[in-house]
Image (spheres, rainbow, N blue to C red):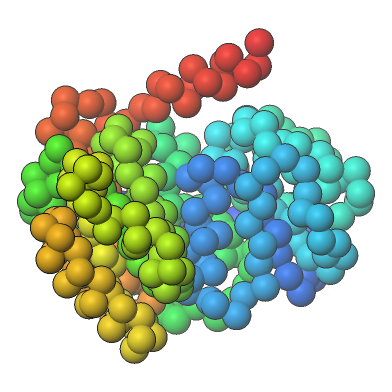
Length: 318
């Protein structure tokens, strides 16, 4: 895991090749079928391009809404995710415009046998949650948006080592607490990635939510009294602050921080760093990766593999 984080920026040197491109039809919108780490790149692109007409489908089958002019992209790093295989099967049965992103497995085999447009991702033994450079570039190749700067320049701009010490310090600060990550709606994917990295790499519970919605409900759960105080004391709050957020969201974060601190609940405000939107998102991803890695080390957990997920998959396949 450590080497994967250190070498993360090199993923942006990847030059995706669309196989069977002659069978790729123009699309006005996009539906990405993906689970876990394999759907995160779609959320990243949504955050970078808020006007992008894109649906992320995290389930079996297809979305209920009919999207005749859409490109249905089945995304699974392993190529064996059963929900994504079902998504592709249903899309093909309806003769919809389909494409595939995968490193191998059944998904790639189906694409090859049926001459579907596909991009094969490098398979270097890394987990999908750390392969976000590869998967973002692949998805970007199908979507064809104007990306400023060009995605490949991130290989030069990003500096993973810059965030290692900060990640280690943050992990120590959060030890023996359950992290709660808050962000604006536009940075929801960043908060989700933090949560997922704590879950899968750090092997600890973690949760996330977005402002302003949480100010209307979840926030009140920490308005503890003497009998419920012990529940609230289990949590530590990480607020992802972005200079591009709406001014009222910034104010809400500041006020929320003061309220939590007055209740003696540990709270940390983290600033998004970087010039462009893509750089800022991926810098946050890198900091979350380091923090989760050092969290795993503090608890003596193995950061790379996810044995419970694999055991669950085996149990439901019996």
